[in-house]
Image (spheres, rainbow, N blue to C red):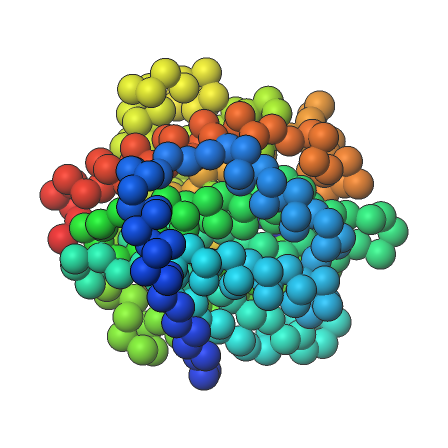
Length: 309
C-alpha cells in the first residue's frame, strides 16, 4: 500500500446503460443528490463481504462485477481496462474500472481510488478502510454526479493493483495508475485531464486528513479552504504536513494536477493499517460523509476555477 513520509507513489469493453425513462424521471423529481455516508458505508459492507480482494483473485473479480453493476445503475458508461502486470511473483491479470459521466465540456476531472486489497498469506485482510472506503466513496459519487448536469466530464476510476505484491518499490506498487497514465498518454487523452482527485483510507472513525506534500499545491489549498468553510477543520488538518506515495504520483509525474486525500493515521500509532483489524467496526459513515461533503464542495470550486478550462 502507499507509504507515509516519502515521495510515494487494450481493448476497452464499453458497456453503456441508459436509465429507464420512468426511473430517470423519478430521480430528477427527487431534486439534487447529496452525499450519503450511510449509503457509502453500506457499499463498504457489501465489498467487505467478498473477503480479501488481492489482484487476480476471484473475490476481486466478484467485487468488480458488483461495482460495475452499481455504476451502470447510476447511469454511467463503464470501461474495463485489463492489463497484465509484471510482479515479483509473476504476471498477474489486473483490471482498472473507468466510469464516465459526460459533461458540457470534454475536459476531464478524474475522481479515483483503489479497490484491491493487499495480499497477505498470514492474516485475513478484508481491507474495509484500505480499499473498501475508496471504492465505496466513488460509487456514492457516481450516484450524485450521474443525477446532475455537469460542467466538465468526470472519470471515476477504480484502480487495481495499488498495493505492493511483496515490498513497496517503484516497480512493485501502483500498477493500475502507472498503466493508465501510459495508456492515456499513448491515446492522447491525458491532455484532456484538468485535475485528478484521489481518495484513500477515508473511513477511519477518528478522521484526520493532513496536507499531502506530494499533491499539487493549488488543489490542496482549495480542498482545505472548502473543509474550513464547511466547519471540518478538526478533520482536515491544514497545518500538518505529510508526503505520501499513492496512485496520484504517476499523474503528478506526467504533469497532471493531482491531489491525494488520505488518512494515514489509522488506529493507535497507525496499528490498524495493513492488519486484520482493518474491519468495518473501525470505520464510520460519518467520516465518509465528511469527506464526501468536502469533495463535493471542492468540485463546485473547480467549476469556477480559472485553472480549469
